[in-house]
Amino acid sequence: MDKSKSKSLFTKAQNFIPGGVNSPVRAFKAVGGDPIFIKSAKGAYMYDEDGNKYIDLINSWGPMILGHGNGAIEAAVADALKRSLSFGAPTAKEIEIAELITHMVPSIEKVRMVNSGTEATMSAVRLARGYTGREKILKFEGCYHGHGDSFLIAAGSGAATMGTPNSPGVTQGTAKDTLTAPFNDLDAVKNIVEQNKDQIAALIVEPVAGNMGCVLPKEGYLQGLREICDQNGIVLIFDEVMTGFRLSKAGAQGIFNIKPDITTLGKIIGGGMPVGAYGGKKEIMDFVSPQGPVYQAGTLSGNPIAMAAGYAILSYLNDHDEVYEQIGASGQYLAKELAKVNTALGKDYTINQLGSMISVFFTNEQVYDFEGAKKCDTEMFGKYFQGMLNEGVYLPPAQFESWFLSTSLSAEDLDHIVKSHEKVLKNLVG
Image 1 (cartoon, rainbow, N blue to C red):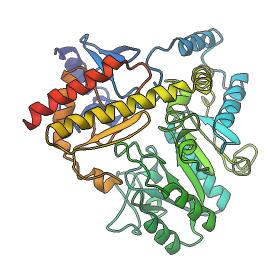
Image 2: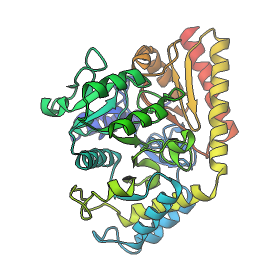
Image 3: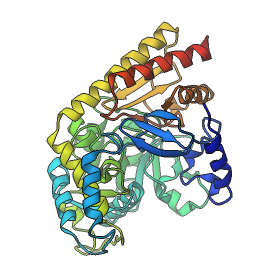
């Protein structure tokens, strides 16, 4: 497979862009080799600058649930383009998409549009602090909520240990207000809350984690978090930037029947355009300026092109329940068939899957949290990634990232993924 143009572009990019990429995981540091530069995409496939074709299992990290180049979304964007790229003023489409979101996600009574998932989570935490008058937040190891300072914190030696920054530029002052606990461990949460009585403004969690690979909540875990927050006056924030409108019309909270106080959204609500949002209970959202005292603003928030794309895809998902049936069946089929290959090769690698999110973990232990994920053979994954890439399957270039499926995947595509998995693993394990 010729990748010479991508290699040349990467060499050039490093002269003008830090690391040659505009988001770190794209650099392929976790899997070796040079990144692939994409030229175009359509349906289930991406095409690189060298003309190579790949089955896409990233789908722009989630938003392309209907595949690339969806006609309805492109038509909506083309229509909006006729009226200008941006106004910096209110539009009717903002109201339409806000109303649709509140209809699809029952826990959201009001919603504020922003421009990214990071902006959504940062704003949600600030709102929770302003609403409660408290300063500390509780997050979970391995859950990624964007690159805001409060979220770039790693746990210490124990679940109740104060966080320490794991990125230069994050201050100790920020770190002391961020508490961390292992995912799926209710006892750790209870202990931390007890040790920080009446000091925690918000608990923020990915209800289904996608940034340590796909990791599912244990039975009763999310309900337990809801109860702890209710008992202690803590704002429960579900980060559904990845899972929102992907796992169901109401996101992960719709599947597990849990209502958070605030939900952060992104990815799908832009249909591929850069969009984020946060929304929740009216009494909390009314603390946001200009209704309330918590300030948050954005020149491009509610951008008309992004709103047109977002409204088109959300309308489609709202009217087509079969999307979730189809994509869930694809996920189940892939998980089952990949597991069969593993068993036939004498390997008991762990596969986690829910709906259209799936991960293959190169470990024989179940993965319920970040500690479990870190036991994976990441060197093995790097070789596996490169092997799959050469077979025309584009995976997330890191062990600790979920795969995302689209409705554009055909039965033939799924079988190609399985056959490639078998061929690559045979070469690696003998």
